[in-house]
Length: 309
Image (cartoon, rainbow, N blue to C red; front, side):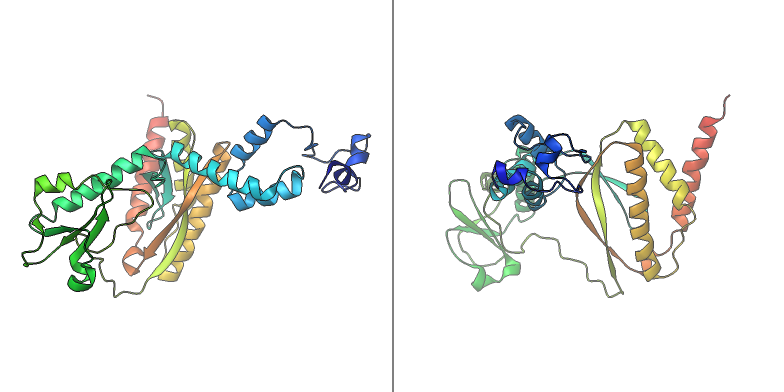
């Protein structure tokens, strides 16, 4: 859309065209002239826009007709990548299976950009190799079909060589020891994937009935006293919740997630949604009596602190 076409277009939520607004007609809330904003302002808008590349593309198409939506989508994707790297290592929060706020550390997993995640991935790889002391290893051979996925760990070194660790009594390749594990620690952590299950901890089989609940993981940018106030208000509003069935538990967890986000948003200007957490719940998670005891102690402790001495 060129400038003349934009002038003749009716502004969003208005009975007037953009040209009429420029000539003095009532201006809708949030209206602006996209042809007068600077490149720096556009860059700031893209950076601060809270959404995906596709979300930004739609916004640009509707509000910034002077820009190419597809190009802006690519720019927003790259912007979000850099933003996630900057946030890597930040404290994140989500509601756990007991309906309590759980604190963890955000890992962006942008291995091609993030030194923190690169170092963590390499450390995990070396630790896995250390657990495979006594296995055999070979270079540039495809051995998965012969030995089975459960007996092989494949990866690529930074120099391009492919390595396969094998659990076998066969006298193949070399024996893996602590020294060779360190020598094989310099792996490529970007654009390549490892394969094989050797050294992975087996997943526990659950024979009990399960439900899956999705909750939000997010960063709260606020001082400690504000974060504490959010927790206390959340405890007060959810202290009487006591599920009795698996379906009730799933429903209450969604409710708790919504309550927590509402309280957090009411106490601070912005919270940054990082992603989703999938909680797998069973009948073992239904009993929330320990939760009630914990919340009661937290609230009582706050009352005692508030009483003057």
